[in-house]
Image (cartoon, rainbow, N blue to C red):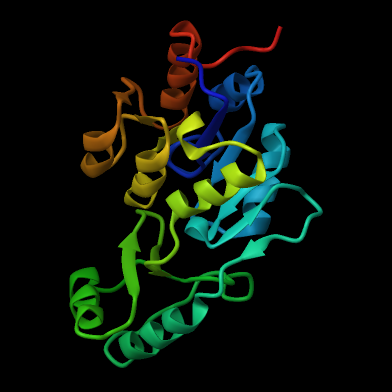
Length: 230
């Protein structure tokens, strides 16, 4: 079956373990005759810069689905969900010394340095009525609304592109990729992915990080699921 677009995570998927962009992955992505969507937990300006450096269009899902745009200069769609995240941060701040990351640029979630007990923090929030969750992406800890995720972001992006989410292939590595891989028509996990991600993937690469993405592109083209530029 041939798919019409590709959605792919950035950190841990088209980078190496040190978050350096993989030249092998970017080279392979540039060969595809397929729209590519970058889906990240990071901020919009970071994702736009990555899209520019990779050499693909600016179809971007940022802040774990909270921010979505289909152009470098277009006004993004921003989910109105930050209020409960701020309440959750206030509750956790009474127990932990928290450090926000990118607070000026974050518009739909709160991201924290990974220097506190995540299990205790989850237990505290579970006792509230807030519709939020706290997740560890291995690079940072995110306080985010349960209403938005990379899956809801992909559905919105697909609508903007005149497609269905099931017409996408998705590639990822972390727990914040689960919903995106779940709504896509075909899911790939790079070999460094969390076990939960591997469990739902249709295919797991033999290589990790960006090398795994390069391997995945070769596999998808060889299987006729994606097409290279002529």
